[in-house]
Length: 204
Image (cartoon, rainbow, N blue to C red; front, side, top):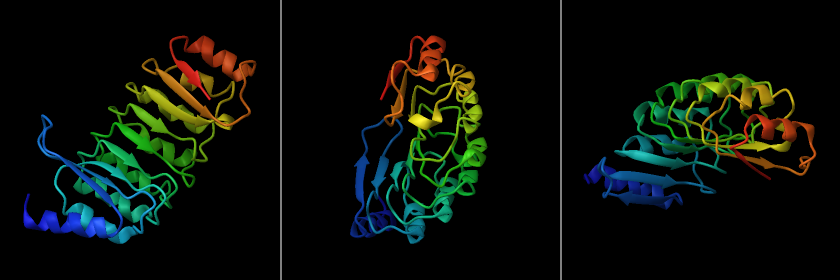
């Protein structure tokens, strides 16, 4: 590992980041940066851009904004991105066009139906968390293009009889996790969803 990258990692750790380095993978060294609940702001972007082979990036519960999403331009190899409980908005999701390797994505409350259109080309995405977003069942119409999606996290109010038309097209879906107390086995939307996706496990 070169000196510049070592220094960047040290500075990230001083901000409260957990940085894991794994050199055993078939694709070479992979770096995971977890800044959850840290003091990170958009000023962390230059440090992240100095890393090589950044595969996992967790920015949840930090003060980052749309600006930090430029990290995807420098690191299209990122496989897992968590921006829940941040100030990243629909505008920041435009940078997902660089994320052809993304497999897991966790979104936060500023994200609306408008931002969902930026997910359409994430063809390797396997896990998507929307339960903290304000995406409605109308925004879920962008999901059918995610043909490899296996796990989906939604809040209870995001599932209706209307949204089932989009969810039933996710043929690779294995698990739908519904967070909230509105749903019950007798909920009409849940009955319709179970009938449409009989092989998917529905949890809440």
